[in-house]
Length: 249
Ligand code: G
Ligand code: G
Ligand code: MN
Ligand code: NA
Image (tube, rainbow, N blue to C red; front, side, top):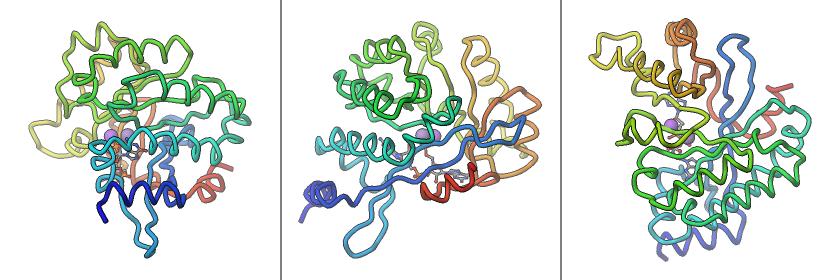
């Protein structure tokens, strides 16, 4: 049976679930948000990671259904938290196809409405690459922000997004790819790039989330440069929703 067919079956059998990686406020050390990350528990018990099935879902036209499921599960897992903690935010990864119509925007708004969250607590993560590819993306991104949802650029620094694009489109948040975070306490040539990314984000009025923070030295450096938020193994891996809610309390 082909992988796309298995994904279809997996959706029917509710085999997709979410883990959440905490987003930490670098100043207070508190968990202030989370990134939802999808996993697939196969019938044989094996857990499949998104890198293995998201590209397949994208190429076989199933990503729309999968994204819809992710939003539903996130709403179930985190709806109460979003309502009770009005400053808490949840980021959800989207694929290029998710921006080809307003359907995803609609589903995110339903999620906000059903859980009693402010739309601004929901953050759509888009990668640089999909911004360049998808011509329809621009109007959907605009519409998302007009509805009060927030939009983040994921994996920043690894794609081909031009500065002029960033200037013409307003984004709320920029996620610094872990490649640049990794370089911070090394001699690598990339170790100054992170400063330029930070300055650019400031100029364009975007909040910053550093990804892949693994050491205190990295966290301290980012904090000293005014980076607001971070994710990474120093703080926590992605964890199951019940464990996440325990950690938050
Ligand atoms: O941390 P992890 O191994 O779970 O993430 C691997 C990759 O899969 C990341 O690039 C992440 O953006 C992507 N990913 C995780 N969950 C989702 C999802 O729900 N939708 C999409 N489109 N991508 C996801
Ligand atoms: O592509 P995206 O950034 O959406 O996905 C996050 C990916 O980064 C996941 O695969 C997740 O497991 C991984 N990740 C999260 N924190 C860390 C970290 O501190 N170090 C490393 N090496 N990977 C991390
Ligand atoms: Mn992401
Ligand atoms: Na990323």
